[in-house]
Length: 340
Ligand SMILES: Nc1ncnc2c1ncn2[C@@H]1O[C@H](COP(=O)(O)OP(=O)(O)OP(=O)(O)O)[C@@H](O)[C@H]1O
Ligand SMILES: O=C(O)C[C@@H](O)[C@H](O)C(=O)CO
Image 1 (cartoon, protein in one colour):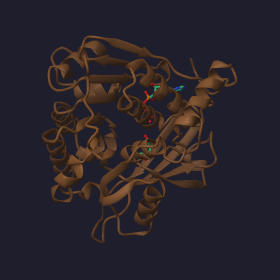
Image 2 (cartoon, rainbow, N blue to C red; image 1 turned 90 degrees about the vertical axis):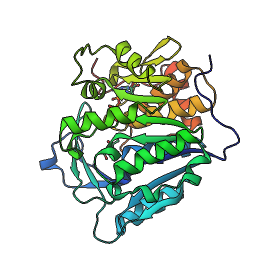
Image 3 (cartoon, rainbow, N blue to C red; image 1 turned 60 degrees about the horizontal axis):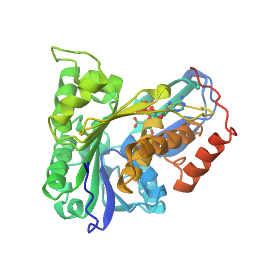
Image 4 (tube, helix red, strand yellow; image 1 turned 60 degrees about the vertical axis):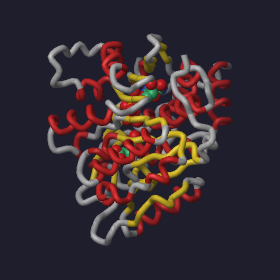
């Protein structure tokens, strides 16, 4: 059974919609934020990272979003363009809004957190009028990400993008990307996440993210297969549930499930794993690979990114992923900072 159809007549491979922001990653690692004094600036935001990943993998990519009319907004636009990402649907917001900042605290390879500055951010000002049906219809795949659903008008813009995608046979992928601090309440969060997930072909999330979505259900089994089955009753063909260092499980609508293992990593920080995994997995899907191969590629890409200081800038090329897998097979990469 063919799970997904990518329309090869469409010129653009991949478009993401949502947040573009800045990561300021601690240079002094293995210490709390209170003792951290210098940071390196990178483009950040989960959908931005995934798009950079896709571009590094050689896909023709574009982004729909809003950036602030400030130095940070210009830095983001320039970085996307340098990576070959089309920015014709990246709009500069009216003066007054700011660029979202994520300060990352790297206390240890397994204890990382993010301190967010997201008041009055430009990315959540994306409006339905910014979403072009013509732009979306020429892509094979649209990626949406949960944080863009946190507030209006960005929320409506994402739902409209999904409608256009479905109307024109564009595969819709949802990366749950749940960041609690951008939401008002768990009730609101679960409501919008569930409404969006109903409309998507592929869903990526962690067990905790799916638990958040299922919090008001009578039967909360926390069971991965039950979670996947629920979405197969709507539109989904593939549901991937990620379990950090314990790997991932992919379920497909034809009743199969596949367990993905992890690659050894010299972990510097754990965030970015999910974005790297998603980009390499989606790349594999678009190349027509079977699910286990997509998972293997995703896991290897994740291991590379968590062994690096950044998320976006560390996204590997296909050759770099192949090389890494080869080195792991030859026993040349030992795990470090990896708690089993
Ligand atoms: N410590 C680790 N060592 C090796 N691989 C890892 C590790 N942590 C995560 N991965 C890989 O990355 C994949 C996704 O990780 P995870 O479940 O942490 O996603 P996530 O929570 O969405 O990530 P993020 O922190 O970027 O939000 C895992 O399925 C696994 O393949
Ligand atoms: O916006 C965030 O939540 C932080 C991201 O910018 C960061 O790159 C990350 O956490 C990747 O998943």
